[in-house]
Length: 471
Ligand SMILES: [Zn+2]
Image 1 (cartoon, rainbow, N blue to C red):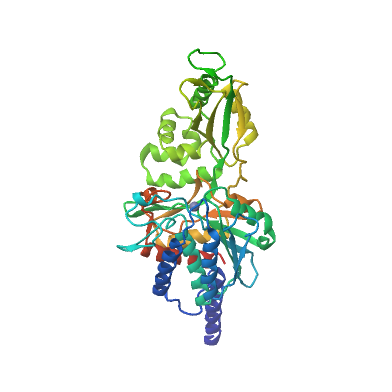
Image 2: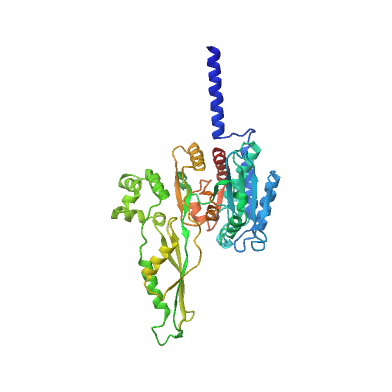
């Protein structure tokens, strides 16, 4: 009896250890987290000093920098696509092997950054300066900081001897901020390297932190698709002292006015529906009820007006149109031969570009106005939330913030994810940090971009846990 019970207990203990292990492998050697944060800080400061302003990008220097760092950690990386991309540009690829019992996870970052205006910064933007606990530099948030969080999480896994069921693939791309030619080239030329990849994550998540408190974790499951157009009207050039009917400028203005007044239809995708349901708990009274059932609320004029007054909510509920560039005559006294406008159109993931274009031509209602695409829309995606990877993020988030929730967010901007989605990979946007919205708003593509060293440290650990929990 006693022996039996002891045996049963032993079995129980063994079973629970095994199941805990299969759900979340632990480090077999202790990880020195203080050292990881210290080294991550030093790595980011050095990475920020590699000026990868795009254009021209200069990502080959960054790829060499990352390759040398990985080599020191015993991870062999390859620099790719130098001949295909422009001179000085490159992609990087590395792989840490697991036992192969499950498919791989790819950690993707872009190495380029947008330009910075030094005179608007309080520190030189490529100095990697550490001041009052913050690491300053162009790219600290977008997205060298996240890139470092990915790499240091990988280093911690390796140093800790965490057993892996899934290979972990590292990709660093050129040119995300301009044409995405880096990711495009990688996906086109190296699909064979990614054949076993099930999940991929990069930027595109957004954790919402207001006045120091975290409201929710936003995991990016979709993004709008850019569908930029140029509208052109041709006329007959002549002297402006004698007005003619062949002036293309007023004709274009009339077309643009019709376009500006046009309200695109509202449409709720599954991910957006879940997002509103999730965030409803941060509201009270009728607003909470409206957000719980956003489809129904959009039929109620008062609810609709309130919801659409939020520019982010408006943008995730419809295709959007922003008229931005205008070109007419370059001389006041000359009627030009041509007038044109650039229009930033962004589509919901499930919108059909051809039928949107047909609708816009109907709205403009003038066959003299020619539409020409400035960009081919990228592949649409809306990644599921019932996956091992999404659940791993939920678990890592709940452990840190039992009160906060995890939701699926749509990005109104663009990332490299669609390039990889075309290969059948489930792509996500992960924000490892707890960056205050005010800091994010000011720094990303703005001035004094920075990240707190402690934020970087906790972000590394967050990615480490997400990677363990998704094994
Ligand atoms: Zn970015």
